[in-house]
Image (cartoon, helix red, strand yellow):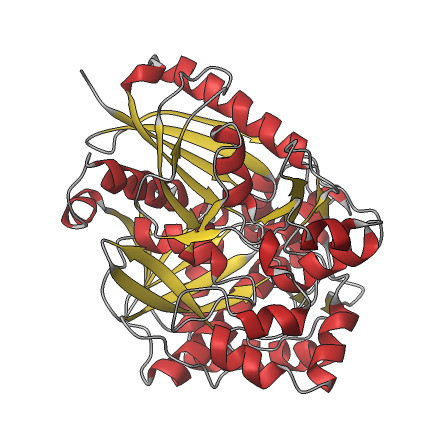
Length: 492
């Protein structure tokens, strides 16, 4: 009987399910969008039941489109928006509040108080992260302190915390398990990079009861089996998990130290494989777990730009400048340059290497001659210039510049953006034939977990380059872009 692997990619704006065969051929791909909730400025929430509904519907639709029966599925892999935080009742499985999304900034004051109390040095040393609202730990504390009676219930062991991977395994297994993987756990401010276990002192610092935390597991193993999922038989192994950016690094076949990728989605995320030991950043990057497979652990340096594709969505939904995201490339290409307009995509603060949660989006350099085309081009350039900042920090930490950068995600299909990215990085940009590398990474981990594939050599054999963008902009023009960009970032 043919064997298939399902990858569930639960992202910020929707859920994608991909069905792959043993040769990593895509038999079906289905996406369902997810509503966003913005109860206050700077707050971003998801309804966990809507997340689950999008997953369940995408599973049914993808299997139907592929013509695959549930019993032909060897394993299910999960990849997910990472720091997004859900709490639910253990007894009923019912969420106690909407999920607080990774973009949410409501805990900025809490982070500031922890910094003022001198907590950041210990947090940085143990977790590789900075004290920022981005991460899950302060989100958990906020929920415990703002939902009536929740902290006492959590301390009694009645409440479970999970990032989206944990929540989906809980739902897929009919509530049988409460687990996470090391990549997602390393994004909570609560996991020690050295021990790969929850750190009791960090739990006390962030005021998070140990009782709410899931068990920490590797990235390619059987966590549970399906039970009570619409459209799926019981008993399918859930056998791979990784946070979306680590899954993309895996799916891009960046298995060797020094290999790097950047994913352009709602935000943009660059990861560099640093090998078997964590590398402490001195340039404003994060140190994170990449994966643990077969007992071997790999670490990465990460730079996160909170807003990338979301800036294009803002042009579409907020300003009505474009009717669809796909229109931006042609509009931006209709002018030779941005006409001096600079756009800083700080709609949710600035992430690495700046870490300024108070920063806000900025458009500067407007003149009477500025048009919507100039603004569209400035938005694409702003996304790429953020990545230049990340690449500079990565080169400083790694002691050498990137040899090349592999790219994926929806915006990697924008040729104008990718060419400008190569120009300002002064580095070749390599786009694979299969750009759904986040889902590919989850699928490959799941297949490794149940023996569909035996080694990473197999993913290397199927990874193929589709296009390479080489730098062509004169160095003087790049420097002019950087001067305008840095001046604008200072004002954001």
